Amino acid sequence: MVKEILVLGNQSSGKSLFITRLLSINDLRKISTIPTTGIELHNFHMRDIDYNLREVGGLMSSQWMSYIEYCDILLYMIDLSDLGSLATTIMLLYEILDCIQHNSSKSIPFAVVFNKNDICDPMSKIIYDNFINNEYEFLSNSYNKIVYFYGNSIDDTSILAVKDWMSKL
Ligand SMILES: Nc1nc2c(ncn2[C@@H]2O[C@H](COP(=O)(O)OP(=O)(O)OP(=O)(O)O)[C@@H](O)[C@H]2O)c(=O)[nH]1
Ligand SMILES: [Mg+2]
Image (cartoon, rainbow, N blue to C red; front, side, top):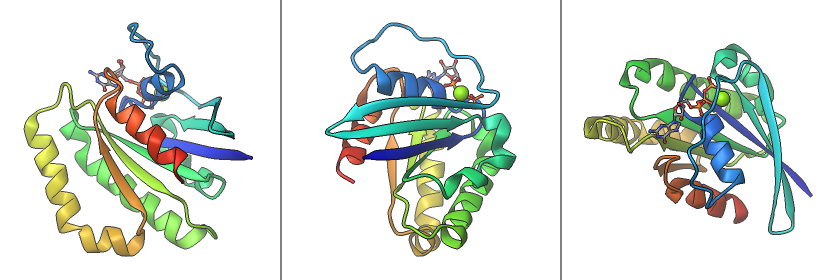
């Protein structure tokens, strides 16, 4: 069995680092990334399941939606340290939810991963928490399987939590 994981998120939100760390848990060496100008494909095996992991770079956000119907699991990465991109981040989140709701014939497990909590202003978590609470009805009506993770890709906490969530789907 092969599951397709799609990783979306603004430029520099941390998708490539998250994926690299997910593929090499416990390897705490400093990893550098370069901006993804197209698509990055990786694969890994976990508990009898093969996963294809596809990152579509933030530069290609205009084409993200065309990949959604082919995925089995969707991760949306948000950079908590970049409040300047808040409006774009939320607009793209709504577009993704709309796309899932209207175009996909299947129910796609969807995780929002709040990243870079090691360097963010504490206010940003409060701002996003308020957004989620205020929009709770919309978010749960439009998609009832949305889950949220907070963390960073410097330690393994959120990566382990996301892996654990995926393994139970
Ligand atoms: N401090 C900190 N830096 C991070 C974290 N995640 C990623 N970064 C850094 O953020 C920068 C961008 O990370 P990438 O993983 O390349 O971002 P991306 O989302 O793949 O960006 P695009 O490919 O351009 O869409 C790099 O310098 C990473 O080292 C994190 O959790 N904490
Ligand atoms: Mg990248």
